[in-house]
Length: 174
Length: 185
Image 1 (cartoon, chains in turn orange, yellow):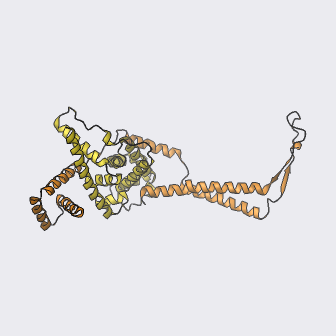
Image 2 (spheres, chains in turn blue, red):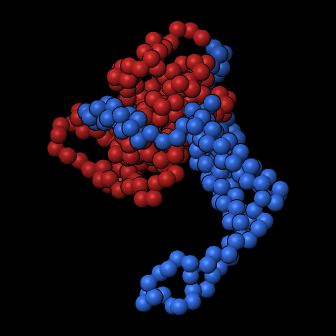
């Protein structure tokens, strides 16, 4: 029953659009003459079609164009890294990180250094007599710098390259 | 690709004549705004989305591959920007159901036109934004089904079915609205 109703509705829309072949057009006319329910349905569709054909373009505000042109200048001044510059910066960070990792593995930062603050000759009333010294492990520091650089590289890859590229594709559908 | 009247202007903009972009904006602002409005159903939001779309289009201009018409490409950006805005919206959109479809002493002809327009807007507001946009673009009579499909990023066959179902839904909603209106008289 539902299929039959949908079938006739589709036919009526095609009838309204004038897209039915001549023989089907005649058939619909014959059915409409006999069937009051279908005639009422056609009237409803005709009313909807008539209203839909009144669709018009809407008008934005008077300042629309001026605001866009102002925004263009503003976004140009704001600058920001282009994708190309981001790629170069990322490459630089990765090369530096690779060099640091190579130096680490070659043992260049293996030695420990002890810093003796007592040699600084600080005023006695502000500091205790014997300031304990501390060791600096070069390897730990360079490891920390390497991990920090990788974190920065990841953020740069995400914000400076992938998001602009994929965002552009989503917006333009390209 | 047949002659696109916007290409000479685009070439000038890419050559550095930024002020020429105002001509492009004036040429297409009504279409872009209408598309944004049909998605967002709010004039302030639609204007913001339409402005964003034009700014984005300007910045992506170098990447325009000229395989489609510039206008189709622009409308696609406008549609996608409006959809993004809609997803970001936190506030509840005020439904047109909240508006009072009352009678004002303005004269019968004006009232009749205004009522019909409000009834249509109310019926359209009950559709999803994709159906609403597809139907609007179809009835503006400026776009082929292929262009509408291109703008919305949907297959042409799917657009045909979507428009057909949307028309049926509008007819049903209009009947319901007019019946309700008759009951309140």
